[in-house]
Figure 1: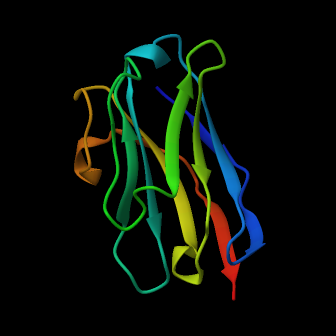
Figure 2 (figure 1 turned 90 degrees about the horizontal axis):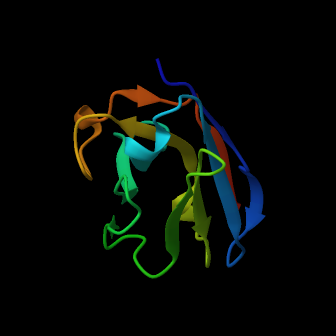
Length: 124
């Protein structure tokens, strides 16, 4: 069983930055592919960033590319999402996810474990 706990969300003005953290339980964290997704009210869950189990590969959609960086610290069992130049359209609940079966993925159904989410609100 893997437990994921997100933190770092909050209210920020447009143009500001936030760093989200996701602390994972489990001794095999370094073998998990990790991802961040977000969901705004009335919208489907949207892929934000992914990192391979080794940390050597990352992937971002065009909507956040250049503004967002995913990273991981296996010593701390933690994955991070650094978000810069935030826009009101980035407002959503952000979820951390772990996959035990793929190297890296943009697809929600390939992730086995999910955190409870952390709210990010960007004001204009």
